[in-house]
Length: 137
Image 1 (tube, rainbow, N blue to C red):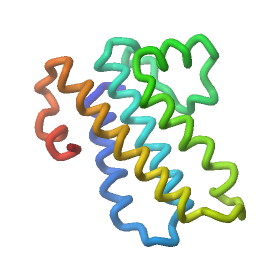
Image 2 (cartoon, helix red, strand yellow):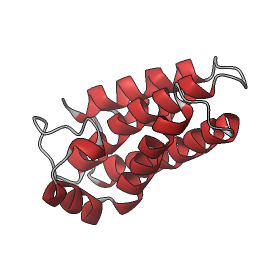
Image 3 (spheres, rainbow, N blue to C red):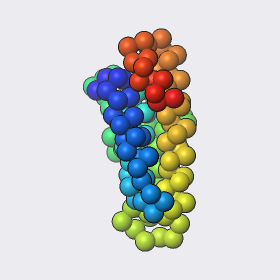
Image 4 (cartoon, rainbow, N blue to C red):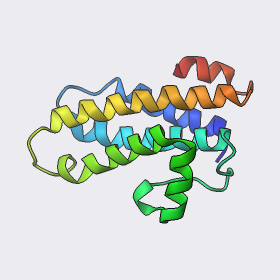
């Protein structure tokens, strides 16, 4: 998938997240993971570390050397996505206390991921998605 499509999909998910209520932590975590994956992929494509045919689905599903390569290029993004993924087993379809706080944490991580990805895309000198990047910022 190309950068512009990742930005479009992540932004759509972000708009949907704005509709959630304070008790919707499961949806917040799931949506943060999905949108975060799009932001990570967009940044990796912008950094020219991953081609358009090489998208991350889950960090936990990558082979170790691939995770390490991506973490060198985008340590904050990879770390944030891994943290969001780690929230899922406990708080999505789980009954561990602290779901609301976990949902808020996922959204905070997603916001940081979005800003980093936009910076990476802008740094590559891309103008094809300038409007969508301004909206995402």
